[in-house]
Length: 270
Image (tube, rainbow, N blue to C red):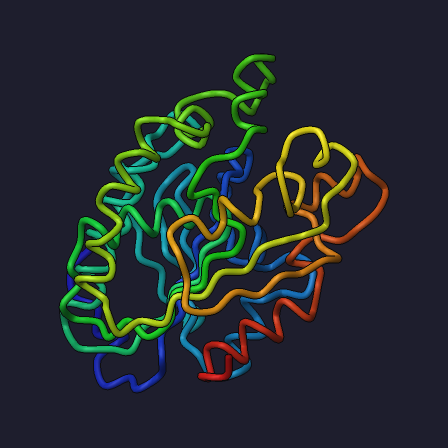
């Protein structure tokens, strides 16, 4: 993997995008996936002048940057049975390698399970070559999701395995993550922590959740680790795939107001 001269002398702020649970997406193609769907948050960030890196951890691990560079670790092959902590370690090692040649301002935007990956990485890596300015967590299940437990009980094809087990409320992974969450504030105390949560509350939300939720993750779970700023989006549900089921609502990545909020927050407007 070697040196990363593409970053040397580059004064752009780097935005790292971390997707959520989607074991069906193993293509690694830069023009597909969470951040390119809907309003194309990846493209909007790049157009705004950021150097954007999109993490792909199913299949071969990659971070694809908007300047054409791709960091690849062909020794890592992820699946729904890859522990979330293993992905966090992989991402931490990758960022240490990428930023070893210089000091850069960095923002991290994580969606759903990607927030757990990011939190685990930040708890276990003191990335000394970055100035972490913003952490944005979009509907991350820090206290789990009841849908993960239901998927286990029903044995739903494609929605079972290690990662689903670890996202179940009360799992050992989530308990250990919560116990060491203070490391994030110790290592990155100056970073601004922002949470986005959905309050769409579809019909099954009344059955599965106690309080505001987006149909998959409750506001309680999304804010479980605390925050500096909280934004709620009442028109949004958790994933685009659920739109097909409910015939209503739009996903986070089809909503320009979410993209606008990300751009505002990364610019220092809260």
